Image (cartoon, one colour):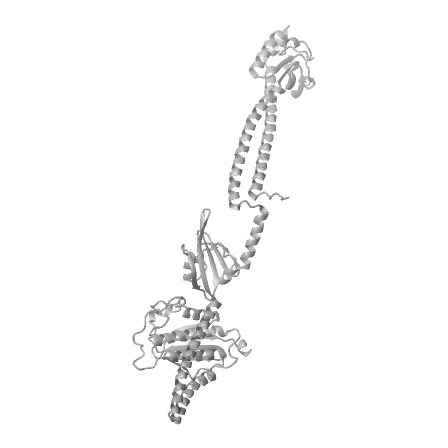
Length: 552
């Protein structure tokens, strides 16, 4: 047997609100009824009291009492007062309680049905009593003549008359209460219908479970997720986005994106109204892939932003490019070695053994000299391998890569907190830009070249590298003999996507120097751009080395 599905949250609220409105209306109706009845009785007591006192104070009444036949004069007077005031009865009696007047003439001369004791003592009192005309609210007051009580007067209004008046008020009250109930029910239905649309008919348990899943997903997903409202304020941000954007404060939600201090290109992408797909943006220490999509719901329009961290992927891509370059260089060297080996073999076959030995020895000495210089100066394996690979690439492109004589990195000097990957990123990108500058005539970091720094004639293009470390600082300097950089563009060279390459290139074009500055900042270093002695560009990177890490 299938159990019925619990009512939706909107349905539960609708039922509760209908019951609440009904209870409130019923309570108000009951209170008003009781209050009206009490007011009606109070009003009746005041009316009969005023009427009785007016009769008791009338001189004509006292004169009629002193006459031989009081009833003859008082009965018409009492009936006229009764009709004019709207009371049920006016009874004037002697101090013994014998009636002189009554709405029913046949009851004149009989004793008054009710209490007269307090009135005989000179008091005016009221009571609800059942007399000959049924239950009534009545008052009894004495009639005085020169201080003596010469008679009594009682006026009253039948309870049935009061109840009939209250019933009329109750009918009107019930009509108002019914209208209020109907209007309240309709308003509750409209509100809950809207709530049902927003909650998609789910009950409280389902909404609570969805909220738990929502929170768990936000905290579990490593990718960044940001939701912006129509005013580009952060409405929701998960832990991954806080980490990727470097937003650690508790007051991030509700702030405008422009107030977060993010890089200008990234802020522009988040504020853009059109969607962005797989855009690469840089922060101080990360490479982010940004996707934005506008979303509309209800009355407001917002934006959903997803962030992916490509910092490590970009570094691995750079290393892969370096490996690919090494492979091409090795292939070229293998081809060149085969040509040289054929030359040696041919010299031997021609009987020129001495020339063959001299030719082979010269080639070996040239290659071994560069290897010995790099290995002797740079003990860090990643840096030495990078320099040897870049030297092969430079040779393939007809560029001389020179390691300065003061270069020196002893084994164990670099701390563990300075990963080899970042060193390869920094030095590799600087050397690649320098090779592009001297081999292709343009540096991958500025739109214009200085006209007075051109490699002349048969001069061999040169890239000079300095790698030096002591206990406090690691210095990486790369200078080239290329055309240099326009001084007006020095502040722009480290921006992502800024390149002198006019031709269409890969998507990562213009990212190298931005990654260099990012890696340098990550380790608290500095990067400077100057003019080299040879007229080209000279980049100098200084990375601090803490003494404790060096000793370790």
